[in-house]
Image (cartoon, rainbow, N blue to C red):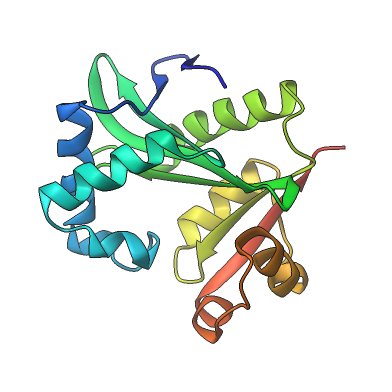
Length: 183
């Protein structure tokens, strides 16, 4: 996996331990009220700076998750990742979170497109999936413009294979599943 993926006005840089600016960014994002309904609810458990540091450092070591900080002109503006599982190597989930002041259709589109293009060019997976909160219409529009198709009929199967768990009613009721088939 590349350490740096270059975009037009930004770079995606692999998480690394000891990166204080990254810790500050993630700590700020995880403590924003507005993101509560839009990011993985598990992340909201990491409110303290020490828990954020442990979370970031554990993701650096992950074999199935590849995390990048998003930097524009040396400023940290968010993070993006793709996650897969050993038992289901055909698919990955892509996820992006931008810090306050950078959220918007255009920048999110450009960043996500660069990561998708990297995954496609390197033939890393057959499917790329993304979940979107059903109330987040901007995210749904973004995913559709990136080429994702709503595939809720596969919701249970994909979630079971990718996360090795039965889908909870909360996920089914609150999130839509979107998929890109690569080849």
